[in-house]
Length: 313
Ligand code: LMR
Image (cartoon, rainbow, N blue to C red; front, side, top):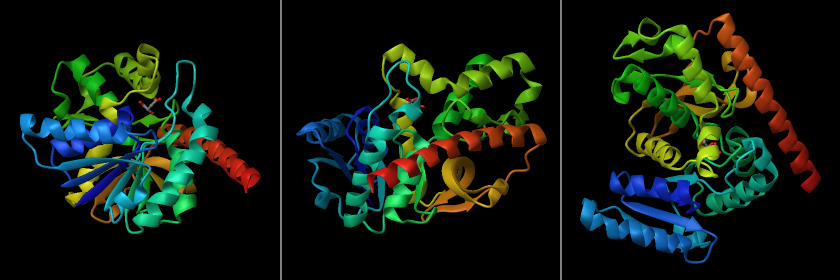
């Protein structure tokens, strides 16, 4: 299997590193526009192979998309990360142009690839990649839900003093402060989380999850990379190994949840064809209202993107 990761910054390099270390693909191509950057990161990952013990080959290239030809999966991480005080939406004008030109190159050389978007603002950049590639929702989608649930699971594991492995959770909505963690669908070793933690503490964890990316931006002065990179690699693994994992993913809704045409986080089955199925949960009225607020927010930013694209046409 051949996997390309576009963008050799912190997130892209972490994703490539996890793909190599866990031998998820035997050929990994890392691309960046900064001269020598991807080559250097790829060489470093390759030189770690004898120490850790893996044989996935990672190569780096500067802007040469011909080297990515016939990739099975492409992860796009390109674009600026945010700085303290910024929202993800503030990145739209810079990152939309980057995601557009990267997607053009990707589909030119790998017309059959499945594309995973990681660039922010995530839901809207996934929409941009769809507009540029013309690919159906099964083939172009975004990584956010695994990251957001990972944060939620990590906070719960800490609060309950249990292994994060035993916390199962699903989360919906946009990858922003309006995201919708779903405590009703959260279990700890099969036990509903609400039986193990008080409402106030759970609400605080839900809130901390929703602003979880911002917490890290404040701490580090830039966006997170270990969990985002690993989350993208986990999606690649589900596809290349046809695992049919159930993950929350940013996907174009086509009638599910009574919504049409909006890119939003929802649980899906991920396998060799990309999105194999969008799962429709039975939400209660409160959850529906939260999801509707999130949809409204993402739709506004999608509309802003449409206007930008019309102005640039
Ligand atoms: C994240 O959630 O870590 C990413 O979307 C990056 C960011 O700026 O929050």
